[in-house]
Image (tube, rainbow, N blue to C red; front, side, top):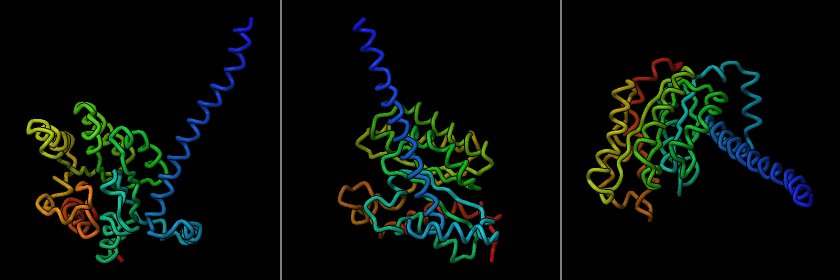
Length: 250
């Protein structure tokens, strides 16, 4: 009897623990999406209500198609001043070339293909993008995720993007040569194979042109500096620009 009473007392505690975990996940996802929405306009958090009100009273403000970047620390401005990463520079370039797209940065430092796949449905639902740029996979390699899992996740991400009516763009990655020649080759081959099999536009390598320039990396020699961000955008732009024909030009 004592054991039964203890079990009954423990049940609400376990339920509260599960609820707390779910609430934490929901809060984390909401925070990520809020950051993405703020990134669409480049405004600070305090200015978000003003931007929302303006969009509600100005239909043209909501008519622009959206680009979402679903990435990790390489796209999340890790170690950089706010609005200096390549995604922010993309927003500036679009404005400079008079191509009307919103840009939402839904990147989270440390994210993996599994994490991106988990939060993608809410991103698609809330932002309703026309184009989703997928920059994920490097952390899979750092964590020893099996290559088959990484590829499966990326294929599922591409399928979800298309199911939501958006155009996927895949950014390829390499891992450092100390992982071994075979692993390095097989890892990058995931992106090439997926792009070919699924007819997805591919940016061959986000960090192309930086490998022999250590001064363009932060102290960890992993994340590019602020000075390197224009080069990252230049690597993405040739693949992205042909897809922007539907943008409203002012």
